[in-house]
Image (tube, rainbow, N blue to C red; front, side, top):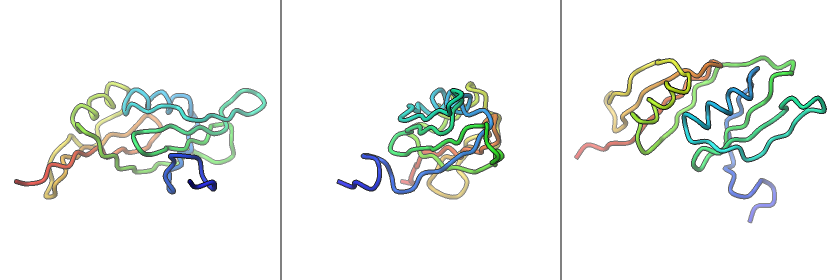
Length: 129
């Protein structure tokens, strides 16, 4: 057991800075089946830091009332069904970057941009037979 990191956490996690952290958490839950693991609030009750589990990964989120501005990022997420997940992300408020397609490798991949500027590349591996 590693005592230098939380149990069942990966060694590397993306960290998203977002002015609407509450909205981003709700999006991760609706689009990707995320579940809030930990949350730390400021004395005024606003979110300072949160951690959302998506499958075997943790997305860390910095809350808005900070001098660190939101910054766009690109994240790649393997899922069981790229098309269904893509559709859930659009229903949860994302916009289409690229419809799911196979483009020369073993992945069916599409891209969405969440309302806070992060691009999510959603893929399911489909090796050639």
